[in-house]
Image (cartoon, rainbow, N blue to C red; front, side, top):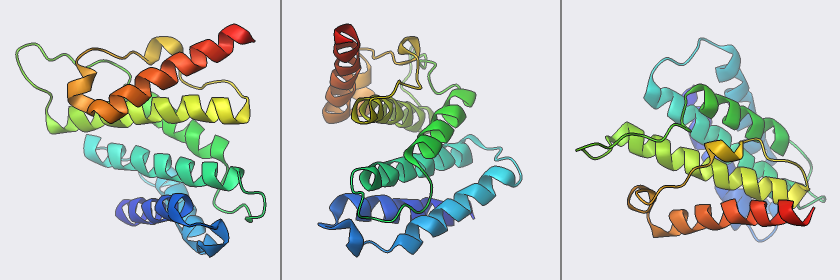
Length: 177
């Protein structure tokens, strides 16, 4: 069920950001993904790190899809709100302690920790962008959004730059409030 939820949410997110008109996206895809993810939430707890990371990634995809729908009032709201998906993703990520900076003393990050770091930073960027676009507050505390020099290696230059800029964007916006 988790794999289906992941692919359905990925499909919904990709459609929402690539379709010239969101009315071309099949709203049932969002609803299917939402139903599958809701069943994952109330079902047996996910135990493995990999399964939990896949779950958070699916929640991120639904956040992206909901963000696209938020900015297009002509599209019927299905599949859950931006607040629901982002809140659930942040809650799950914090529960997994993805915000803890991995130690790399003498070794490189293993695949799971590398994916976890990328997922966390993607979620931090989405949180800041959602706060900016909705005028609301952030869900991830500033002390949990820590960018290190080593992150450029883990994240790649584009995500590293985006993370750095979104962190400073929120700080700049708050200083004007």
